[in-house]
Image (tube, rainbow, N blue to C red):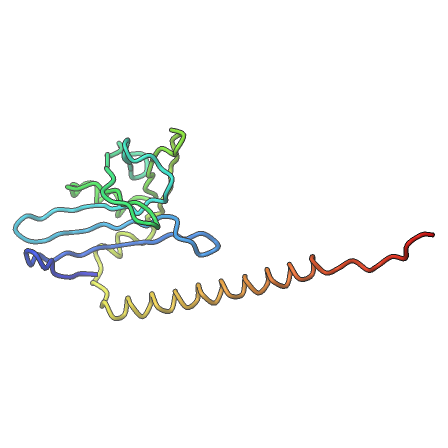
Amino acid sequence: MCGKDPGNGAEICYTTRDFVSDAGQPVLATAVYDVKGPQPQKVVRFLMPLGLLLKPGIRFAVDQTAPLAGSYTVCFPNGCFAETVGLKDETINAMKKGTVINVSVQNQVGREVTFAVPLAGFGKGFDGAAIDPKVLKDQQDRLQEEMEKRSEEMRKRLEQSNAQTSAPAPATPAKP
């Protein structure tokens, strides 16, 4: 998707991918921004889950390449953004040809955790035509509806399961 930066009028295109749990909860999202204009630059941004140490930042590597450092920029109730600014063309090319981005962070007890972000389709998405924002919104709305439908079905199954397990046991006659 592409748009204009309201501040300087530069064209900004981005390629994004969101990852959710089986229950439909956001786990991680990644986006690569390509800022065109007088000061072009490329940025990778990750929306990381909560509960990670912010100070050490992140490291990410495409397949087995040398890792690049990134830092956290802001946190929201659903996660924290970490980014690396000034990606070189060779990193973008590696992402287009690669299979996975390994994003390494530290959890709240200081242990390293690595998220493997699949790169399937990244090159096609990055080099392809920008998606119309209305089409994207329609797709997101349909996805949201599907997630709500699944959530409602899971809730009903859980209620039925709870109703069956909490049914009173048949009364047994007291012994004299």
